[in-house]
Image (cartoon, rainbow, N blue to C red; front, side, top):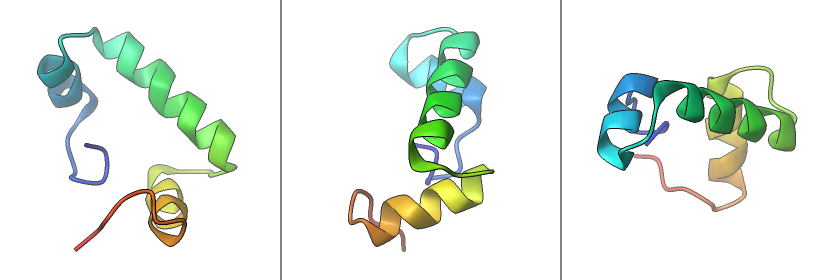
Length: 54
C-alpha cells in the first residue's frame, strides 16, 4: 500500500486500524530495511522481490 502511494490515513482506513498504528509499522519497516525514507524502502523491497512496482 505504501508503494501504491497511499497515505497513512488511507492505509489505516483500508485496514481498519488507527493512523498511529500505521505510523508505527512504517517506522518499523524503515528500521528493518535500514532505509532513511519511504522511497529508499520501496526501492529496497522491490530489489528484494518483495513487491512489484510498475
